[in-house]
Image 1 (cartoon, rainbow, N blue to C red):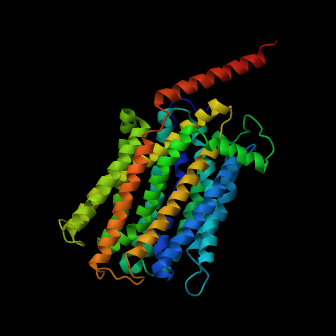
Image 2: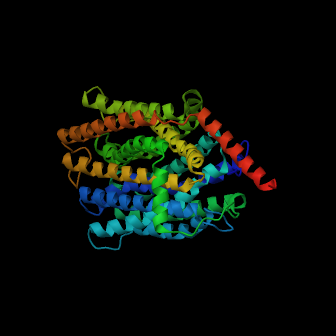
Image 3: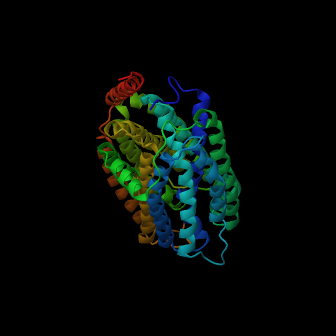
Length: 479
């Protein structure tokens, strides 16, 4: 299949394509940083019950994702395979997001109420994100330009998430006490819903002229049995299995780290309002740092080794402050020296963590051509939905683990900053650190063994192009 764009990609295209990831960033920030503490500390649900509901929602969504990807691959309209999904799902997704943060219930919501709305939000988000990211291997086949597109997707995704964090800490629920007030979360949800809608529809409109045309071939009619057979065949691709093993551990680590961060920031580091406001600023700075280091890392070590280095570096730097804290070698928490030192470590650690995830995500685009070479079919959305399957199962597991860590550490539901027993803090930190170390090692081991190199990818493209030319010549030349 010929890519839509050859040569260097226009800057406008990079920006417009990346802008679509803002919706994912809004969702990820909400689910990872605020939803657990909102339903637990504000609405009064048990932390383990909240994390279990969110994990179950992720598992349901993960099972549905491959079907959505398969349907996207087989969509046949004059607007192409992906755009109809983006236009149709944007508004329902925005409305569901607003409802998630404005539960119509007296007292704590039930497990089933939270599970139901969480499933709706996640499925609709997949109906937008899977088709959007599946445009990437269609837009370009270039090894480095694919990384560039992912850099912009991650940049805008983080911008969306960080913007919501910044507004949460400064406008909607400023300071530690504000994070425990329900009114701020209501506005947080409504504003996020508007941003999600603008992101999805705006990105689709910006790419419409490029991708809105009939696909080259018309797929066969949908059949559920055939759908599962083709999905299973795609997921047996060796490169995908190796990627999935590493990505599974990386995403569990990410889900746990994000969902526990507010607990650690409030109760371990005792951030005040100013420190909380600075947190998204530091995260944004780390995204900017990533933007400049990921390209040189890929040029020197390639995507697999860069992913492994990113995972190990992120853990080592990210957990170092906690080690020093437990050893009594850290400045007084809550002070300027403590906050500045912690943020210095997080700046670099988070940059390395994003490098690892960008490298892993970019690998999937190369799997598309490997599968095409073996089967003669392209399945961009199937593989990216497979990535979401892995990510969501793993992120759900990470959130579930956080709930258990909080429960095992005996942190009370009405916890007060600065009044938590030292043994509770130590238990929380040690559980978090031990799990993080194991997950980083597993992720680095498998991602470093991803089998498709730059040279192999370029050789495969040349072979596929030669095959396509031969097929065209055979059709033109009379027997």
